[in-house]
Length: 340
Image (tube, rainbow, N blue to C red; front, side, top):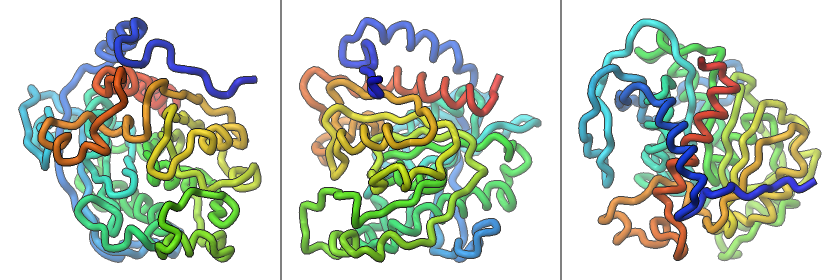
């Protein structure tokens, strides 16, 4: 059985996109509120005994009944309402984990689409491996801490934040890209083994490359979090070399792969991950896409400053793809988090 199937029409000029766009538009009935929160240093992850770490910030999108406004945030202009009050009742929650050197804004269009449709979405800046803090990006300790970062964010939202009364803790999902995809798989129960995974490492002299080759890198603590009921994983760093590494994964998964890969992610390794999963994932490969196509489309100034992450291959439209991508992510999370 072929595990990967092309996304029919999800490429520049694809005719099948129109139906998905109409479907996605019909699902979006609200605007998105936007607020910034800070998770304090050394917050303890729930019941895990190992959640301590530095402070970090997160952006939270939420359903909003007010008309959207243009909100300049960093290099982007978002559409939403700052600190929009939430109506009574509870909403499903989705946490977003960015890739290497990314930020809480890396997937802002996906977050906004989910909030428009009734989700609360929280995207963090991973300390030590974000666009504003690269101090630990070349160290295994930072990569190892990523799942704890996400657990700390979830604990904060459910226990301490002003949004807690509006979150349904039974309906929590996850979206992760690249290293963020790796993060989500660990939270879902996967156990990485870097030494056996055969990950490409262009600079073999880099400390992280040496740490990955060390057999001790397979040791924990790698702690799953059963609170995540559905996960969307896009072009993940695959440090899971066989079925035994993924045996603990039980939650529903939507797994996305670019056709060409990049930044240390190989399409054949994502395909192998799909084969080894003990659950039947909803697997999609995006024709014509390279690794960074899953990032939000770049405004012109950012595209000029960061062409490597903003420019796509000839014939591929990131803007068109993202409208269909966001609609499918939304449909999957609606299905598995029971939003009706």
